[in-house]
Image 1 (tube, rainbow, N blue to C red):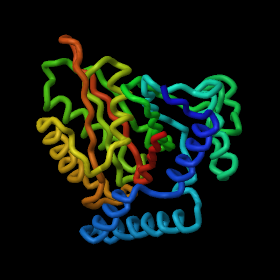
Image 2 (image 1 turned 90 degrees about the vertical axis):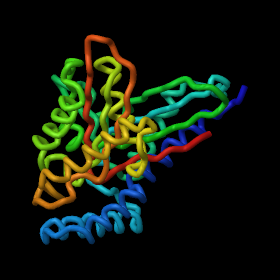
Image 3 (image 1 turned 90 degrees about the horizontal axis):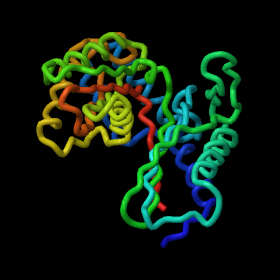
Image 4 (image 1 turned 120 degrees about the vertical axis):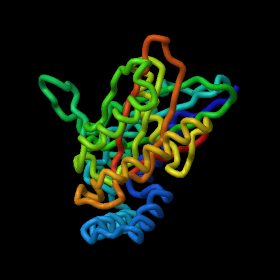
Length: 281
């Protein structure tokens, strides 16, 4: 049995949320620079240049990449041989989020009652916490500060099995096309296929914690990722929605077995501020 300190979890959560909000994913940063070189549309090049400069300033000045510093979402893998020295895991996580957003001067965007009162909680908690029990004695925490300009463009649909591959592709491309400039392109597209209604949505969010250079280990899904990437970049939405060949920086698909009667598909879109950081304790 491995004992992990409550305070260590709290400090680690604070650290990775600050890191994620100040420092763009390096692979995304390099892809933005490559896209700038490839773009022919002058307005698109200007938008990409502005994004690149913004990311450089955020890193050097320790300032948020975007004014929307997101809702705090976490994926936590808990080894079966892990135990906290005291307290409750979710409390430690929420304390870490609270400290990061208060001490880092990050915008607090969470409201307590989503429908009637909508009063700001003033510390960006509670976080959305997804936990998974795994083998071993490690605790892996992945922080995803998710902005809602792109989150609001996400969709889920319960397709029929007969809709097949073409039906899935059509739904994904139509979703991106209808989103247009709203999710602040260039975007990264997370896709969840299979499972149940809620599992597909969770898979699509988890897909956004992967590297944009990674490929699905299943060659059929890896091929679908590549095809969607090419088709989305033909939509001419472009950086900022001003046209161009850089609408999408990556498509990540995760899948899970499903019921014989259904084909759930969820799409979770992320803006160019692709923010996720992990730590293992």
